[in-house]
Length: 253
Image (cartoon, rainbow, N blue to C red; front, side, top):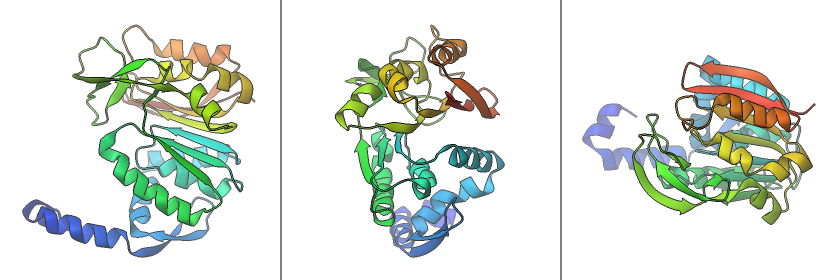
Protein backbone atom coordinates (compact mmCIF):
# COMPACT_ATOMS: atom_id res chain seq x y z
CA UNK A 1 0.00 0.00 0.00
CA UNK A 2 1.29 3.41 -0.95
CA UNK A 3 2.46 6.09 1.44
CA UNK A 4 0.35 8.55 -0.53
CA UNK A 5 -2.80 6.66 0.46
CA UNK A 6 -1.67 6.64 4.08
CA UNK A 7 -1.21 10.40 3.99
CA UNK A 8 -4.40 11.31 2.07
CA UNK A 9 -6.84 8.70 3.43
CA UNK A 10 -5.38 7.41 6.71
CA UNK A 11 -8.54 5.63 7.90
CA UNK A 12 -8.90 3.74 4.62
CA UNK A 13 -5.21 2.91 4.70
CA UNK A 14 -5.49 1.43 8.18
CA UNK A 15 -8.57 -0.58 7.22
CA UNK A 16 -6.88 -2.04 4.13
CA UNK A 17 -3.73 -2.74 6.16
CA UNK A 18 -5.79 -4.59 8.78
CA UNK A 19 -7.38 -6.75 6.08
CA UNK A 20 -3.99 -7.48 4.50
CA UNK A 21 -2.46 -8.37 7.87
CA UNK A 22 -5.05 -11.10 8.47
CA UNK A 23 -4.51 -12.91 5.16
CA UNK A 24 -3.03 -16.38 5.83
CA UNK A 25 0.56 -16.87 4.70
CA UNK A 26 3.05 -19.71 4.78
CA UNK A 27 6.24 -18.22 6.19
CA UNK A 28 9.67 -19.77 6.64
CA UNK A 29 10.98 -19.53 10.20
CA UNK A 30 14.61 -19.83 11.32
CA UNK A 31 14.46 -23.65 11.46
CA UNK A 32 13.90 -23.50 7.67
CA UNK A 33 10.36 -24.88 8.03
CA UNK A 34 7.18 -23.31 6.72
CA UNK A 35 4.52 -22.28 9.23
CA UNK A 36 0.99 -21.10 8.50
CA UNK A 37 0.69 -17.66 10.05
CA UNK A 38 -0.46 -14.36 8.48
CA UNK A 39 0.89 -11.56 6.31
CA UNK A 40 1.37 -9.57 9.51
CA UNK A 41 4.07 -11.98 10.66
CA UNK A 42 5.59 -12.12 7.20
CA UNK A 43 6.00 -8.33 7.37
CA UNK A 44 7.45 -8.61 10.89
CA UNK A 45 10.14 -10.95 9.57
CA UNK A 46 11.13 -8.90 6.51
CA UNK A 47 13.80 -6.62 8.05
CA UNK A 48 15.27 -9.61 9.91
CA UNK A 49 15.70 -11.43 6.61
CA UNK A 50 16.99 -8.50 4.55
CA UNK A 51 19.19 -6.26 6.75
CA UNK A 52 22.67 -7.68 7.25
CA UNK A 53 22.97 -6.65 10.92
CA UNK A 54 19.59 -8.18 11.80
CA UNK A 55 20.33 -11.35 9.84
CA UNK A 56 23.54 -11.76 11.84
CA UNK A 57 21.77 -11.08 15.15
CA UNK A 58 18.87 -13.45 14.53
CA UNK A 59 21.11 -16.27 13.30
CA UNK A 60 23.47 -15.85 16.27
CA UNK A 61 20.65 -15.85 18.81
CA UNK A 62 18.85 -18.79 17.21
CA UNK A 63 22.00 -20.90 17.46
CA UNK A 64 22.40 -20.02 21.14
CA UNK A 65 18.93 -21.13 22.21
CA UNK A 66 18.26 -24.83 22.74
CA UNK A 67 14.84 -24.88 24.31
CA UNK A 68 13.60 -23.96 27.77
CA UNK A 69 11.83 -21.01 29.36
CA UNK A 70 12.43 -17.68 27.60
CA UNK A 71 11.91 -14.14 28.93
CA UNK A 72 11.82 -11.20 26.52
CA UNK A 73 12.46 -7.94 28.39
CA UNK A 74 11.53 -5.14 26.02
CA UNK A 75 9.55 -7.37 23.67
CA UNK A 76 8.26 -4.59 21.36
CA UNK A 77 6.54 -6.57 18.54
CA UNK A 78 7.51 -10.00 19.87
CA UNK A 79 9.94 -11.00 17.14
CA UNK A 80 12.26 -12.90 19.47
CA UNK A 81 9.44 -15.22 20.54
CA UNK A 82 8.80 -16.13 16.91
CA UNK A 83 12.53 -16.52 16.34
CA UNK A 84 13.00 -19.01 19.19
CA UNK A 85 9.65 -20.83 19.20
CA UNK A 86 10.66 -23.53 16.67
CA UNK A 87 13.41 -24.72 19.07
CA UNK A 88 11.19 -24.70 22.16
CA UNK A 89 9.99 -27.80 23.98
CA UNK A 90 6.38 -28.63 24.77
CA UNK A 91 5.10 -26.52 27.67
CA UNK A 92 8.10 -24.18 27.75
CA UNK A 93 7.20 -20.73 29.10
CA UNK A 94 7.64 -17.71 26.84
CA UNK A 95 7.19 -14.44 28.74
CA UNK A 96 6.96 -11.11 26.90
CA UNK A 97 7.57 -7.99 29.00
CA UNK A 98 6.58 -4.70 27.39
CA UNK A 99 5.50 -1.61 29.37
CA UNK A 100 5.11 0.74 26.38
CA UNK A 101 1.35 1.15 25.94
CA UNK A 102 1.85 2.38 22.37
CA UNK A 103 3.01 -1.03 21.15
CA UNK A 104 1.11 -3.41 23.43
CA UNK A 105 -1.89 -3.92 21.13
CA UNK A 106 0.36 -4.92 18.24
CA UNK A 107 2.40 -7.22 20.50
CA UNK A 108 -0.71 -8.96 21.87
CA UNK A 109 -2.02 -9.52 18.34
CA UNK A 110 1.29 -11.13 17.41
CA UNK A 111 1.35 -13.27 20.55
CA UNK A 112 -2.13 -14.54 19.70
CA UNK A 113 -0.80 -15.72 16.34
CA UNK A 114 2.19 -17.31 18.08
CA UNK A 115 -0.18 -19.16 20.42
CA UNK A 116 -2.15 -20.57 17.50
CA UNK A 117 1.04 -21.65 15.73
CA UNK A 118 2.82 -23.17 18.73
CA UNK A 119 -0.10 -24.25 20.88
CA UNK A 120 2.02 -26.18 23.39
CA UNK A 121 3.89 -23.07 24.45
CA UNK A 122 2.82 -21.34 27.65
CA UNK A 123 2.77 -17.69 26.62
CA UNK A 124 2.54 -14.85 29.16
CA UNK A 125 2.49 -11.07 28.88
CA UNK A 126 3.67 -8.58 31.51
CA UNK A 127 2.91 -4.89 31.08
CA UNK A 128 4.82 -3.65 34.13
CA UNK A 129 8.29 -2.21 33.54
CA UNK A 130 11.08 -4.62 34.42
CA UNK A 131 13.72 -3.02 36.61
CA UNK A 132 14.97 -3.60 40.16
CA UNK A 133 11.54 -3.43 41.81
CA UNK A 134 11.68 0.26 42.71
CA UNK A 135 9.80 3.21 41.24
CA UNK A 136 10.89 4.11 37.72
CA UNK A 137 10.45 7.19 35.58
CA UNK A 138 9.10 7.01 32.05
CA UNK A 139 11.45 8.97 29.84
CA UNK A 140 11.56 9.85 26.17
CA UNK A 141 14.68 8.88 24.24
CA UNK A 142 16.04 10.10 20.90
CA UNK A 143 15.28 6.70 19.34
CA UNK A 144 11.49 6.71 19.64
CA UNK A 145 11.23 4.07 22.39
CA UNK A 146 10.63 5.17 26.00
CA UNK A 147 13.02 4.24 28.78
CA UNK A 148 11.67 3.10 32.15
CA UNK A 149 14.26 4.01 34.77
CA UNK A 150 15.25 6.54 37.41
CA UNK A 151 17.69 9.06 35.94
CA UNK A 152 18.93 12.62 36.37
CA UNK A 153 19.74 13.18 32.71
CA UNK A 154 18.04 15.59 30.35
CA UNK A 155 15.31 13.33 28.94
CA UNK A 156 11.73 14.50 29.35
CA UNK A 157 10.27 12.95 32.52
CA UNK A 158 6.64 11.94 32.19
CA UNK A 159 5.41 9.64 34.94
CA UNK A 160 6.65 7.58 37.87
CA UNK A 161 5.38 4.02 38.29
CA UNK A 162 6.32 0.86 40.18
CA UNK A 163 8.59 -1.64 38.47
CA UNK A 164 8.95 -5.37 39.04
CA UNK A 165 12.18 -7.33 39.17
CA UNK A 166 12.96 -10.34 37.02
CA UNK A 167 13.54 -12.34 40.17
CA UNK A 168 9.93 -11.69 41.19
CA UNK A 169 8.67 -12.62 37.70
CA UNK A 170 10.64 -15.87 37.75
CA UNK A 171 9.31 -16.73 41.20
CA UNK A 172 5.67 -15.79 40.56
CA UNK A 173 5.47 -17.74 37.28
CA UNK A 174 7.61 -20.67 38.52
CA UNK A 175 10.05 -20.20 35.65
CA UNK A 176 13.37 -21.89 35.00
CA UNK A 177 14.75 -19.50 32.39
CA UNK A 178 17.28 -20.76 29.88
CA UNK A 179 17.43 -17.61 27.76
CA UNK A 180 16.70 -13.95 28.52
CA UNK A 181 16.78 -11.07 26.06
CA UNK A 182 17.19 -7.56 27.50
CA UNK A 183 16.60 -4.44 25.41
CA UNK A 184 15.60 -1.67 27.79
CA UNK A 185 16.96 1.62 26.45
CA UNK A 186 19.59 2.38 29.09
CA UNK A 187 18.07 0.55 32.09
CA UNK A 188 20.31 -2.51 31.60
CA UNK A 189 22.19 -2.24 34.90
CA UNK A 190 19.07 -1.93 37.06
CA UNK A 191 17.39 -4.84 35.26
CA UNK A 192 20.45 -7.01 35.94
CA UNK A 193 20.44 -5.90 39.58
CA UNK A 194 16.88 -7.18 39.84
CA UNK A 195 17.74 -10.68 38.57
CA UNK A 196 20.64 -11.68 40.81
CA UNK A 197 18.91 -14.77 42.22
CA UNK A 198 17.95 -15.84 38.70
CA UNK A 199 21.55 -15.55 37.54
CA UNK A 200 22.85 -17.59 40.48
CA UNK A 201 20.19 -20.31 40.37
CA UNK A 202 19.52 -20.81 36.64
CA UNK A 203 22.49 -19.21 34.84
CA UNK A 204 20.46 -18.35 31.72
CA UNK A 205 22.08 -17.17 28.53
CA UNK A 206 21.46 -13.45 28.05
CA UNK A 207 21.15 -11.48 24.86
CA UNK A 208 21.98 -8.00 26.13
CA UNK A 209 21.59 -4.82 24.11
CA UNK A 210 23.53 -2.01 25.75
CA UNK A 211 22.82 1.62 24.84
CA UNK A 212 25.92 3.78 25.47
CA UNK A 213 24.18 7.13 25.00
CA UNK A 214 21.27 6.22 27.29
CA UNK A 215 23.11 4.73 30.27
CA UNK A 216 22.69 6.95 33.38
CA UNK A 217 25.64 9.21 34.17
CA UNK A 218 26.44 7.33 37.38
CA UNK A 219 26.73 4.00 35.50
CA UNK A 220 29.31 2.95 32.91
CA UNK A 221 29.28 0.13 30.39
CA UNK A 222 32.17 -1.32 32.38
CA UNK A 223 29.92 -1.49 35.45
CA UNK A 224 27.45 -3.60 33.47
CA UNK A 225 30.18 -5.90 32.19
CA UNK A 226 31.81 -6.28 35.61
CA UNK A 227 28.51 -7.18 37.23
CA UNK A 228 28.01 -10.07 34.82
CA UNK A 229 31.66 -11.15 35.00
CA UNK A 230 31.42 -11.32 38.80
CA UNK A 231 28.45 -13.64 38.34
CA UNK A 232 30.56 -16.01 36.25
CA UNK A 233 29.57 -14.78 32.80
CA UNK A 234 31.60 -14.00 29.68
CA UNK A 235 30.45 -12.31 26.48
CA UNK A 236 30.42 -12.94 22.75
CA UNK A 237 29.96 -9.84 20.60
CA UNK A 238 27.16 -9.87 18.03
CA UNK A 239 27.35 -6.32 16.66
CA UNK A 240 28.11 -2.68 17.41
CA UNK A 241 25.92 0.10 16.03
CA UNK A 242 28.15 3.13 16.72
CA UNK A 243 26.87 4.91 19.87
CA UNK A 244 23.37 3.48 19.54
CA UNK A 245 23.69 -0.14 20.64
CA UNK A 246 26.12 -2.91 21.52
CA UNK A 247 24.63 -6.39 21.20
CA UNK A 248 26.18 -9.33 23.04
CA UNK A 249 25.42 -12.85 24.18
CA UNK A 250 26.45 -13.50 27.78
CA UNK A 251 26.86 -17.07 29.01
CA UNK A 252 28.53 -19.06 31.76
CA UNK A 253 29.80 -22.02 29.74
